[in-house]
Image 1 (spheres, helix red, strand yellow):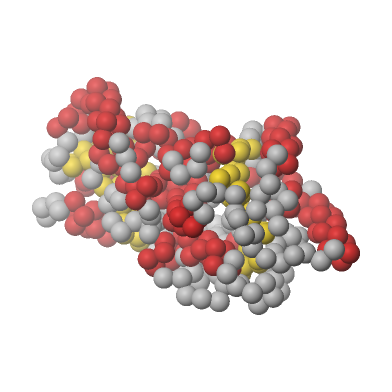
Image 2: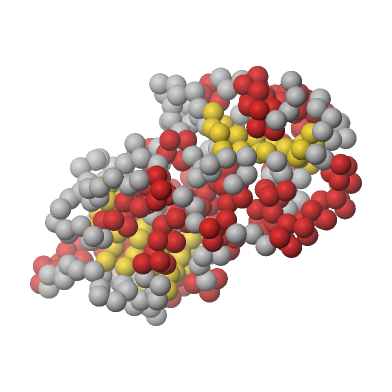
Length: 411
C-alpha cells in the first residue's frame, strides 16, 4: 500500500475506532476504577514500533535497559514486516516474539492485524510501550494488548493527532530532544506519580542513549564471508586501500531528503581522482536507478554498483569493511552506527538534533534554515516544500573536504 493510502485508513478507520475503544475504557473504569500501580512481577512486555527501521536502532539502548531491569521478562515486538530485518540484525528480541504486519495490500494488512490481536490474547502483557508518534493503529494495538500499564506519546492540549485515551502513562513528545531520549522518557514515566502530568520530569543524560555492546557485536566470519563475496564479484576491490560507500537514496515517501544527483556525481568524480580510493554505490534492489546513473555517467574502474548486492543481514558486515559512508538522511545512516563506521550524513527536511544516528564517528551536515526541519510528527511528515534548498545548500566542496579529512587523504 502507498503511504497516503495507509494514512487515509489510519484516519478514517482509526479515529472512530480509537474513540469507541476509549469510550469503552472510560465506562469500564467508571464502574471499576483502574488500579494504578506497576505490577510487582513483570513477565511480559510489548513494544510497538511499526514503520521506521532507523528507529529500531534508536530503541536499542532502551531495549537493553528493559532487559537489564527485568531479566526474566519476555519482550514481544510488533512491527511492519518490512521493518523486521533490523530487529533480526540487532539480535535483542527472540525471532518468535517478533510479530509483523504486511503492508502489500489492505487484505493482507487486515488479516495480519487480526492475527496479531489474536496473538495478544494468548499473552498476559504487564506493560506496553507504544513508540509510534502519530499512528492510531499502534494506539489500538496497545488497547487490544490488555496490558494494565500503557505508555506512549500523548498530544495533551495540542490540536490534531487524536489517538484515543488509553495510556496510563502519557508522555509528551518533545521536539527539542533527540528521539532516543523521547523513547527513554517513556521508561522513566513508570517511576513517577500517575497523576503528575505530563511525564517525564527529569533530565535524560547522553550516556543513556549510547548503543549497547550487544547491538554492536558482529561475528568476524560474517565479515570475511562478505569480503570474499565482494572480491569475487568485483575483483578491483581487492586493491582498495580506502572504500567509500555512497547512498544517494532515501525513502520514496520522503523525497525531499535527497541530496541532488549532480552533487553525488561531482563528489564521486573528485573522490575517484585519488588512486587509493574505491567507491561503491549502495541501495536496495528497488533503488538501482540512482546507482546506475552514477556508474554509467563515470564509467570508472574504481566505481562499482552494489545496489541490491547485499542482504540486510550482510549490511553491517559491509559497514565494517568500508572506511566511510556518505549518505542522505535515511536508514543506512542509522544502521552504520551499529558498526560505528565513519559516516557523513546529509540532513535538511529533518534535523540531526532529533534524528541523528547514535554514532560517535558520524558527522552531519545541516544548514539550519528558518523553514527547516519541515518534516515533523505534527504534520505526519508531509511537507509543502517544492524546492529543498536545505539540501542543495550543502555544497560538494564542503562534503568533499570533510571526506578527505575523515579518510586522511592527501590534498
